[in-house]
Image 1 (tube, rainbow, N blue to C red):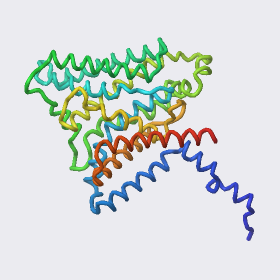
Image 2 (image 1 turned 45 degrees about the vertical axis):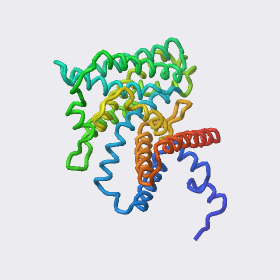
Image 3 (image 1 turned 60 degrees about the vertical axis):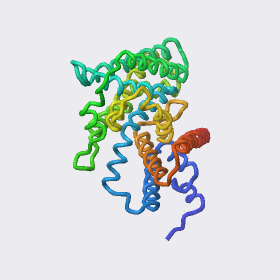
Image 4 (image 1 turned 180 degrees about the horizontal axis):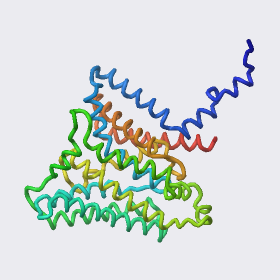
Length: 333
């Protein structure tokens, strides 16, 4: 019976630091799933008996809109950008829909108007980033103020009593089938499939990776980056609007600043999920797990009793730590 030499043991892929770095870089969903399970065990230890199917349903229901917003960040980060307007666009969508509840067209017209307004905001953002070369951080931040201002103007023009979140949105956002399965999965699952397949199986998805990885090479290969970016920010804005509708139904509230607090967690979910803030690397699957991790972490902090400011500090620290670790890993690879 032969004994492995030190050189052979060193070649074992599970015994080298490089292999572990590559695992965190190329397969982040594996260690993230482990981290998620650890958090679930911790919250079960802190409050025994809390973890169960009803609790899992609540966590899934709360994580759906965050995962959609994280999808917006993943798509934009792949090109080296970021979308800070998702909170304003999402809030606007929920609020505008609520103002149409008592109108002749009803909530259906409200959803159509909200999605159209979101697409228009995304179009303007895409033109600014893709055509006029405004930095995505500045463009999306400015667009968030524009959308917020227009939503406030709309609020002043459509002051009415008795309007509220329509019943179908409440059913989707906060309802559960069989008392466990969130109804919002009816919206999220098709969106997730489209994003996952779109990124890996379509030419447009490959263009997003190419532009973020090497924009010069992508341009020399014939890719028209400005067209890709315009479509990108339109898609991101529409996804944000859909997330806003779900949040409105989940909270049974409609306001012009309802989803503003989810901007930072959406960035954190994308970064935790392995999407590089430098562009060219990442995926939506990791962001979904990242959204679940943050939702479970929020539940844990609630059980412990930490206030909202402490959660925001924690989210910021997570982004800094994970981004620094990811940069180190990719540099050493």
